[in-house]
Image (cartoon, rainbow, N blue to C red; front, side, top):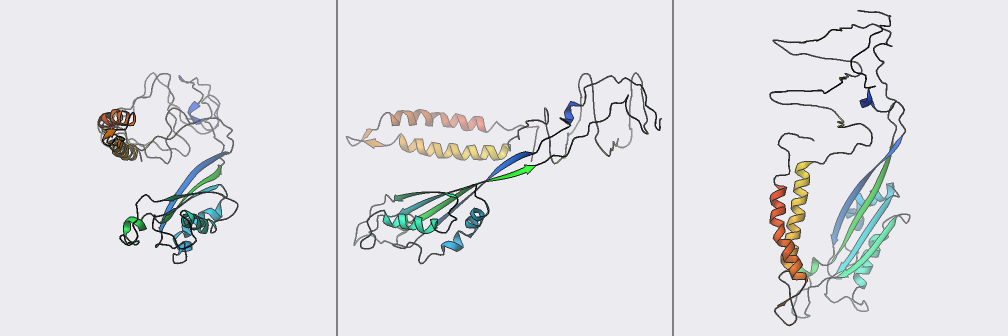
Length: 296
């Protein structure tokens, strides 16, 4: 037991506290991406006069006004229902897209594209307000925004080596140390850090669970660390992609060309080959999650 003495003790492991990282850290910029999509449908022939564009796009417009690191993609669409007089096919979709564009700041990147629906319309027979036509009359707005934040980590304070420390301390030095609690817990509490430093390995054996609760967890080192993925979310997303791919390849392999009834090659062959593999991919995906390691 000491008060202000420096004790010339040589500890068994001298790994220089590498897990604490460098003592001097530089500010770094962390970027994240915000993506918002809004689809607005229009009555037949309408370009925005009877649609509350500002109200429906309020959230996206507000985000665009806050940050110039923004890209807005606007897709204007119209159906094959005849346009008003003197409005050629495609002009309605263009006007819809441009009316939406006018709501956004001029100092951001805005990409516009237009399209015409593929549902045929027969005048005098088809109803222009049928959902199959109104569903093709829309403007879809997608905002992608990069948000940059500068983080200045506080300077890291490495523990002073035992043979250089001056201050109150208790030193236990022996060939072997055993801390055993035969009825309750062992509690280690520290105002700064708790360091386990060893020449060989750190082993933790738990009969039930190992739980680490912390705002940040680094495995392998603190520098250039990358985040782990969320397993359930990844499996869910990949499952959706495979389902869409299965639908696409199923459609492609059944396409017929000219002469009528003949397969379209080589699209059919490629689609069939990929489609045959998707069942195996889904089977592999069902076994991809760890049974032991969990994260949030």
